[in-house]
Image 1 (spheres, helix red, strand yellow):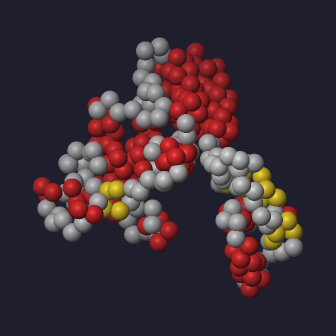
Image 2: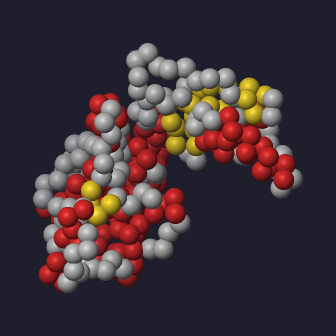
Image 3: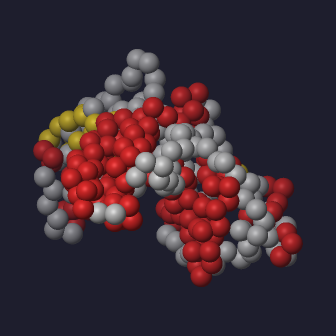
Length: 276
């Protein structure tokens, strides 16, 4: 419940907290007011101050960082501290691979890396994939070290490529699966000049070209250009026609994922971090 309170508090709207309190009382749910936290996300210099926020008479403390569902958010949404922590965790697991390497062949070392180390760096990439290049490279350095342990000259897809494929897959699922209203609101709009275009096999790709409104604020725009869904929409519209068929269906999802991975890899695609 503390996380729920934190999410509401960041809206800086006392009525939202009053509504939450009233909802809890109506359904006989008790909250712990002292565990509520606030996070002021603001790119302005100097940062604007939050007004005093309270919940059930207890002040909501403003924090410099806030952890929600395993992801650490900061006031600039830089995700530097989160990715630094994840890189540390991944390096700790990499020690196990290093110790086990002498008794494993190349394939075994690769399996240990994929099963034990890489999942740490694959958690929630759609949230933080818009981080700065230098921030993302904290994870890249872990994979670079792992490649040296597995075998010099070995190759694995870059983390950036894996995360881009995951984002394309998620965007595909958003469009072909029945989703709740909050999730459906994330789907970028079809380009205006393409709306109502007949969905024939020859025109299947053009029927799915999307657009995304960029923020006007310079700092927000810079992050959005690298984040989901903005950057993925740009890549989505470049995909070969045979990958985006109309209508989008779930049984084609795996085929779409494999096709996107192959295309981005062959197109010498680059994201915010470097290929390894």
